[in-house]
Length: 602
Ligand code: M6R
Image (cartoon, rainbow, N blue to C red; front, side, top):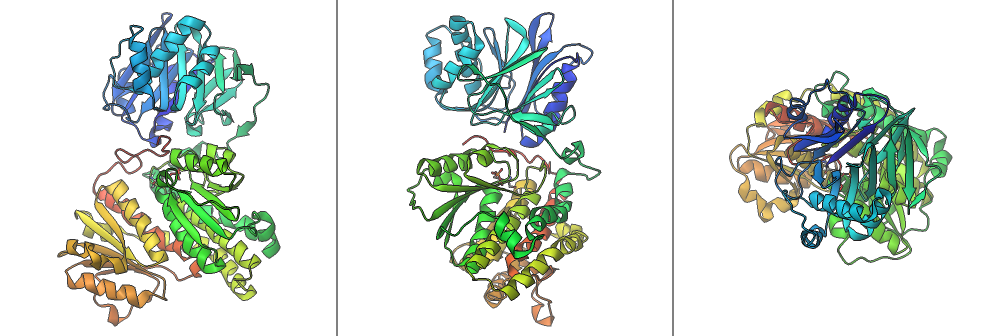
């Protein structure tokens, strides 16, 4: 989604600072970019369609200026063209915005009565006019911004320059992320940490309705018109390399290769002090007899894996829900149910809204989140952080893996407490967890280029599996389609013949996943069915294949490990295969078209 950066301070290289920030926010997804800065005591705006490079070509970087705001736009209202790009300027107000103003049409009609004319199709221009109108009445932007929050429905993070205060940036937020950073007398606002990392790793998180006023040598943060004395300071513990490619061609490949470390950092601290350590470090789940896991995209797929783990190892029933559905459906709450929200970014609008609904009903909530201090992490009753580190590629890999790891630990903790996992099995599992990083690195040594070459020109690729393998198939299919743009579907292997098998024709690739030995023979029968219709079958399995499997066109064997953590290994070849296929198709792997890393609008 849109990215915001703003700088005011000692340096007269604000243009470079803002462009650096925008580049670091590219991963969020965008289709145009723009900046506003001060030149000859006036606000200047430059914007351009497409990549930041196009914008850079229009900027004279010799110009010295101490203040600038910048924006990458991911189109919501109106096409991705020049007139809809940010910053927008109405009257004295120049505005960049991330979020969606839901009542903008209504506000637009009101503002037209005050002779405001609109040139773009955006909700942002309406917000800009509204701020300008109120500013004419009140002449004080702090008061204006606190009033705006009562008039606007929807979500926003705003960065603002006012023509009457050209040495000052104002900012505020509601339901869209925004951080503030202070380094000596340099002040920044940004949608996310990578945008400021080149300059500082110290930052503060803004709460909803906070208003920031920052000028050359001063910053004040208000809430409810009152000055906030202190805000908690955070230090980003990774270094700038965490937000750089480190020699890898793409962030996605770098992040796939970080997965053994991610597993060590996410899982090992819970095992260091034996069973008691695991029990103490995990929340107490003893009062719950049902879970709702609520999330979106890959985090929803994590939930599907988690359902199998928790149900099989603890006997607690689990409902897995897509957050955008959950927030509008009839919900059945009871005090013995725990609502678990899963999100890498911790800012996904639908997941956040679901969390708030659960809290309105006084339900206990647990967040499984990667980004420290994100909205979901802050608002849930309890949070378990996965330790995936900074994930830049839009397609998640290491965060998905770490989420599964966290659910395996949760299943383990509950299984021990409920005695559904005995000591022998626990020992076997902990030994296998310790082997995971090595096994992951072994899988990462494999080359999937040849297989990718066989399938990258196909129009449709199917994934099948049963049980937990079906959940992994869904993630494999999403990974492939989101970065390679090949149409792909994942099917429960037994369901294929109820319709979709009619799409299988000569050479259609079908990637079948078979790691669950209890139902392997059933999936094998389904594989034979698609084979009989001409499919090109790629089997991803833990089974050592013998001659009986001569109907398989291509096989990928992953090491067999305890089922509670098997999916952690199974998914890796699918991530790498998707990557290689997308590369052969010359796709923009880290920033696939139309997608955003953090989906902060509904
Ligand atoms: O930040 P979140 O985990 O809440 O994001 C959820 C989805 O938007 C995300 O997993 C998305 O599906 C990824 N692009 C998948 O690779």
